[in-house]
Image (cartoon, rainbow, N blue to C red; front, side, top):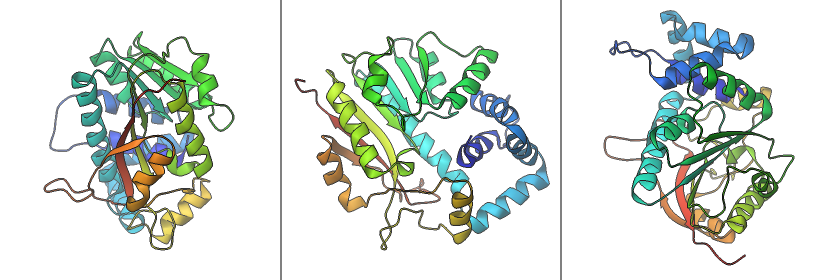
Length: 288
């Protein structure tokens, strides 16, 4: 599992010292995931549940990328609210999650909305661990499909054509959270074009992408050389990005219409670590 994915899991496990309620599903899932991810996962878990360990992690993150754990929570809150609104009010009947990782969203939404078909795609090693943990937690719903595949090696159109759970005639929302920045621009364009071309029903997109700085490099605004080094060592560098001004025209080039770019600065709800753009787009069906 990627170091970024492990860090996101750790953020889900972070104890709330002001809340004595039982652990949430997100916490239970993240806990089990970390336990199954070798020495790195178990080390992070130990640090998170040890007071001085949390202080150490906070110090390291404060020096390298201040606010990143809170940013993950900010991002997830916006995405969950958007998805819930589109499902409940706008007739979305299929949720396709690209690069789902170990996130709990698909499992939770498949349980909350029984009419919603949820399909998650990620690498075989990731899906194997996730399936075992969800089965252990008795959380693998009939309307949740875990598809093991590396999209770097196969076509998403061919992959979905082989999956009986997927239907091109269902109103669909595609979620690509924390994924696009690790793909080259041609690969992203191919992915979005294929998704647009195979659909016979309305298609929506909820996605994040790194913002390009003045030098044209994709990065968080507060990103330090320590973060650059960590991403390089773990072979997880950001390889693509987009400027806020160029977002609408890029989406239009692959057939999508930008609906909203979520503002990083909001009254009472500012992104603690800006630089990753969160946006919503859609496309109306056309004759194929």
